[in-house]
Image (cartoon, rainbow, N blue to C red):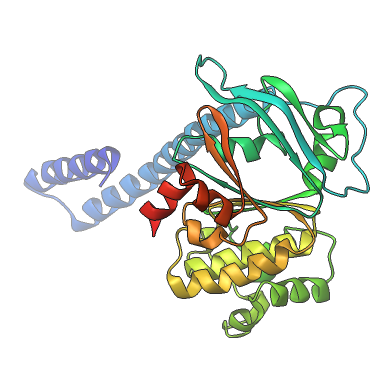
Length: 327
């Protein structure tokens, strides 16, 4: 009960008491009084509700305007060109990075040459800069020093849209929108046909469970996919990337939050997706990247070890210790 309603009720009781206290009171007079009170209070209640809605709406509008007025930190150069016909050769040339208003450098003098179609795994302790390094490729952050190039073109010289159109990302925390399964997969390529969406779901090992849903591809999955399991949400995320069909992939802890059964299904989908694409994999479960063509051990000092699983185990260095701890 609101304060307004409480006050009205008190007023009605008091006024009614005054009337009833009179020696001669007609019931019709009391009923008329109550009707007048009702007629009087309804417009006031409507006005109060409108005022409350207006205040809430105005507060929301102010926050909306604040967001619109935010200037992006990363913008296209005036002479930026589109990135076309990407093969996937990526080069880090003496790259260093630190966050704004921070003296601590997350990455130091990273030199890395990744050939098109390579499968590269990044490992290391938490806070070593693995996710940050991969986030520099689509320019979620700007390098502090050095440069990153794709097929010989500095990524700062190409448009953000064309750059990110050529990169697919599968993260641990999958974001799904309120809507249908079909709409969420279509997000990877908005102009795709329904046949292309279904084919992408099949490649991601998602078609079978989607067909088992009440309305198939037209099933509403709720905000952030609350009606799906973790493995199902991850497969929808992979289907998006299959539909987008980019030449460069980034897998950021894509299976770390899944149970063993779901992990195996998702891992199979990821391996199909990575075929013939330049792929960066960030992993804490080192058993999942044993077959990587190249494993990089990233620390605060930079890339300290590089090689295959067998080569790094033979060195008995940082990677070997990490692998023994995570077994």
